[in-house]
Length: 79
Image (cartoon, rainbow, N blue to C red):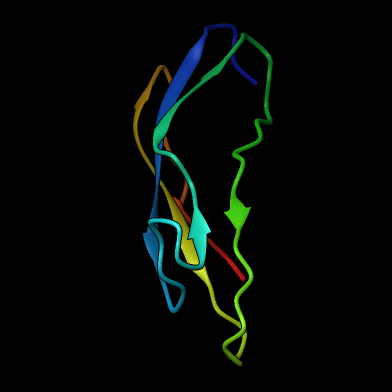
């Protein structure tokens, strides 16, 4: 935890899933953490379709932290 407010940008990128509403929708944005706050939620809308597909995934990338340093990796894969 930190004693300062922290901000970090996030955006989704396609893995095997296709964004822009086809398989999922995640809006890019900025998370703001209050001092000592350590978790935030990013909402994703997962779309169902009638096409048989194996498990698909997409990544959430973090960038541009202010008052913090990103760990490794700075990307989380959701499937």
